[in-house]
Amino acid sequence: MTLKLIIFDLDGTLIDSSVDITNALNHAIAPFGLNPLTREDTIKLVGEGITRLIEKLLASSRGDSASPVYLADERGTLKLKEFIINRFIEYYTAHLIDHTRPYEGVRETLASLDGFHKAVISNKKTALSHMVLDQLGLSPFFEVILGSDAVPEKKPSPMPVLKVLSELRTEPVHAMIVGDSNFDIDAGKAAGVITVAVTYGYRPREVIAHADYMIHSIAELVPLVEKINVS
Image (cartoon, rainbow, N blue to C red; front, side):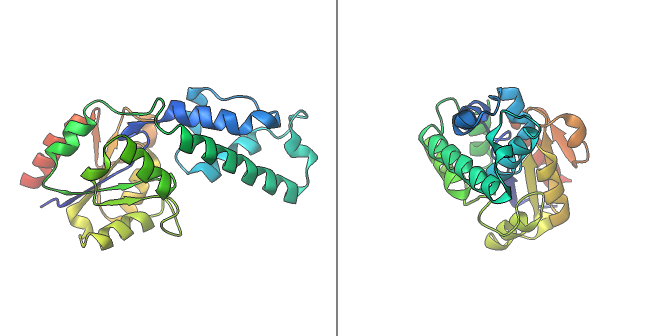
């Protein structure tokens, strides 16, 4: 087998952005009587994009009489969700890398894989994905950076993976996806590519155990790729 393309998830795989996302969420919900989140709370919620994350927060607050969500009708609740999302994006855009950093070894690993096509697929918005990678100096490593709004369906749908394969003219058998969540692994399997789960990210090992391979640091990806290419 000859591997030609490596696709990476962003948050929880290449970068730890949990503190900045938590701060942005707490800013967004502060006026509405919702309990502030800890970093650990955020890690449990992330993975499906900001819209779904806010929906989870609002759903978890039901039954709390202090929450203004339940004084509104269905239409009012929708408007509140949109307002919170806008507050989140405005704050997060201004504080993208206050605390966000690449995981140890990411830059060196990407440099070591310079003979391969590389792409990012994130459930973060495309513009935000570009911005955080630009500000961290990681953008030059990637030919394609795809966010949740680039295709009609996001991970765990295979659609983003298939779009990257098409753009880089690569057959699934020659591609790999690396991620920390079941959304990444499920998307990769549905698209027919090799799946690699990282255990240092945001999801517990039991939900990523169905990956083809599992690594405990990003540096382990280089020997794994070499092994796959000679097998």
